[in-house]
Length: 434
Length: 169
Image (tube, rainbow over all chains, first blue to last red; front, side):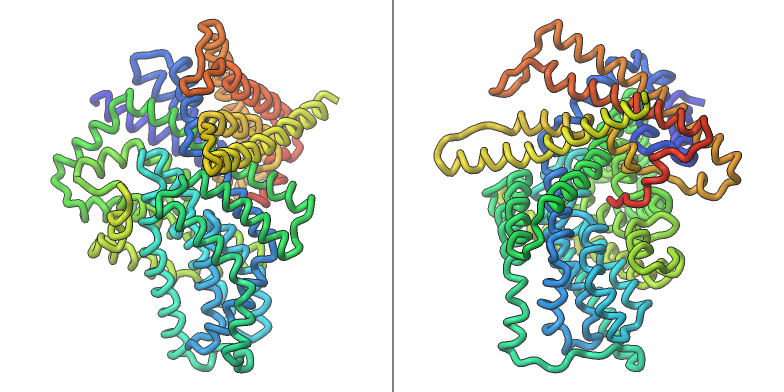
C-alpha cells in the first residue's frame, strides 16, 4: 500500500473513532492531525502544530465572526421577534397560506441581521409558534417551514459559516456575503411558493386570518420594522459599496443592535452581559475548531493527501457537475452526524484542491456548500434547527424532521438551480468592486 | 477546594474572554470613528490579538458550560457502564492532546520571547505577549479537563455533559 493511501486510511479511521466516541470535535481534529503528523510527515509535530494553531487564531478576517455572533445574540434578546410578527403579518395575511408566510419572510429578514441559523429559527419561532398555534394553523407545516426557513441564517448575509469558509478557502468574505443575496431571495420565493401551493391544495387545513386592515393600519403596524430595515441596509449596503469590511460592518451592527434594544426597552445590564457571555462561548467554540482544523490541514498537507486527491479527481475525468453530485452525497451523509462548520473545516483541506482541479469557481462553491450545509441543519439525528425546535415545541426530533422534509427537498432543488444557472450566484459579486 | 479554585479560574478567564470580545468591537469602532475624523488608526492587528486572547481564555469556561460541540450520539444510547468507559476515554484523549499542545505552545511563546520577535504590523509589540494569552488559556483548559476527568472517575456526571443542552451554533 502506498504511503498516501495508508495515511488517508489512518486519517479516516482516526476521525471516525474520535468523533464517534464523542471526543470534542476541535480536539478530535487536533488529535487526528497529531496522528497523521507523527506517522506520515518527516518532521516532529510539536513545534509546527504550535505555530500553526497560533497563526490560525489571530487571523484578522476571523474577527468578524465573534462580532456577528454577538450581534445575533443581542438581537435575539431585543424583543425583535414580536416586532417581526406584528410588522409582517398584515402584509402576508392576504396571500394563500396566510400568516404561515411570516415564518419564511420573518426568517429572511432575521437572517439579514444575524449570521446563524439557530438564532434565526429561535427568534422568529418565539413569537410565531404561539401566535400561529392560537390561530389553528397546521402545526406540521408551521414547524417544518420554521426549521427550513431558519437555515436562511446561513445563506443570507451576514453569515458565520461564510466567514469560516472565506477564512479556510482564502476567499473574500465580502464577495461571499454578496453572492448569497440572490440565492437567499430565490429560496424565500421557493419556500413561500410551496406554502401557497400547499394551502391551495389543503384549504381545510389553513388557519384563521386576522380581520382586514386598511393600508394606513398596515403601514402603522410595520413602523416597528424600520430599525431592522435600517440595520440591514447599513450592513449589506456598506459591504456591497466597499465602504466597510465585514468586521467594521459587524461593529456598526452591534452598535445598531444595542440602539434597537434600547428603543424596544429590552436593553438591561443582565441582557448585555448574558448576550456577551453567550457570544463568547459560541465564538470560542467555533474559533477553536478553526484553529484545530488548521493543524489537521497542515498535517494532511505534509502527508501529501490533498495533491494526490486532486490528481485522482483529475484522472477520473469527472465533470464539475459529476464532482458536485458526489460531494453533495458526501456532505449530506456527514451532515447527519456533524454540524455545518465542522463539516466545512474537516473536508476543506482535501475538497478545495479537488474543486480547483476541475475548475469550479471558489465563490460559487462557497454558496453551494452553504446550501448543502443548510440541508445538514435539518437532517436527523443531528440537526441544529431540529434541536432548537424540539426545545421550543416539545415535539420529537423525528416528527420535526418529517415535517421539514419537503423543505429539505426544496433546498436540494435550489442546488440543482444554481448548478444549472450559476449566474444566480455569480451575478452580484461580478458587479462588485474588484 | 482545589476544584472550586479551578472553576473560579475558568470563570475569571471566561469573563476576560468576554472582555476581549467586546474589545474587538470597541477597537474597530474607534478605527472607523478616527477615519471619519481624518486620523487613521490601525487596529486590525490588535483586533487579531484580542480574538486569539478571547478564544483561548474562553476555552475552559466554554468547556465547563458544555459549549464545545461533540457527537454525543453513541454515548447517549449505550448502557451506563460502557457510557462511563467512553467518557473516561474521551477525557483521557482530551488530557493527552491538550497537555501536548499546552507544552508546545508554551515552548513556542518562550522561544518568541527569547528571540525578541516583534509583531509584523505598525504596532510592533513583542509577540510573546499575545502568544502567552493563548498558552495560558491552554493551561487553564488543561486544568479544567483534569478536573472534569476526576468527576468522571468518581462516577459523577461531568459539568460539560449536564450543561450541554443550551448549546446552539
